[in-house]
Length: 279
Image (cartoon, rainbow, N blue to C red; front, side, top):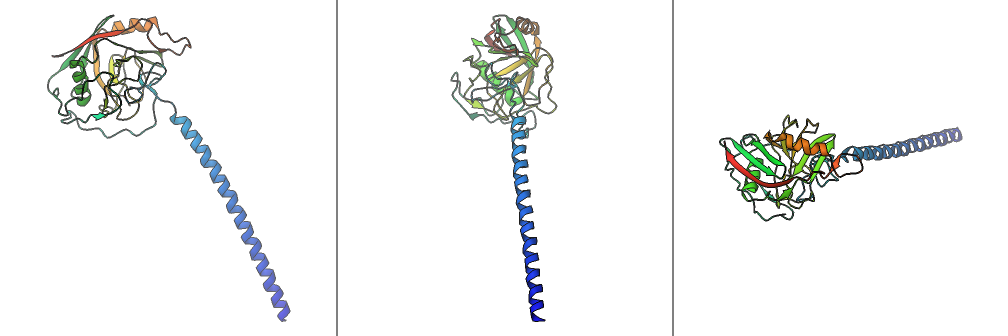
């Protein structure tokens, strides 16, 4: 009798051991599957986030790439980076933060933290070798951006600078604001985005190029035809005169021979001066 019970116990122990072995096998198999799934997801995520847009330079940033990354040089274009949109301050802002970043293409210092151009309406008259372009500045919707733009204009930062990038496919912009003409130059500081909620880049829009959230510097782009871009680039002005000048430059095309419509404008555009007036 005792022998029979001992045999039953032995069989029970062996049955339990087999069950445990099967459980461990299944656990290892699902762990391997989980690792494979995670790796695939990572590859997909990298692919989705790799398309960048217009870059702005100065701190090696970008702006709408493929267009105004207006991100960097003619090789970059505005393309959305998958990144969170920063919380935007109420407008008009009463305080601006300009953070040192990169090497200044022209040493002009940093704009005042207290915006001097909140009240009233301001225009920028941009004289180029192709003619004069007039911008209404949105200082009530993008206070710190306009504060920086006016500061740089009054310091002659934009004088004798090329518009280094033209895109004629996908997005339709002329990008300016880099004294070096390389697409990587900036003022030596960066600042936060503004006026992004519901931002659209219709014909005549003037917006900042950047290389990600909070990387605005001096580069901006002029939209000469309705463009589809993610709301990642601060709109701070509207072209109210001279739009046809940019459109004519666009008709002449770019120097890019690969046919993607993103390069230096064949008809070179040089900003001779930018003058600010209160309307």
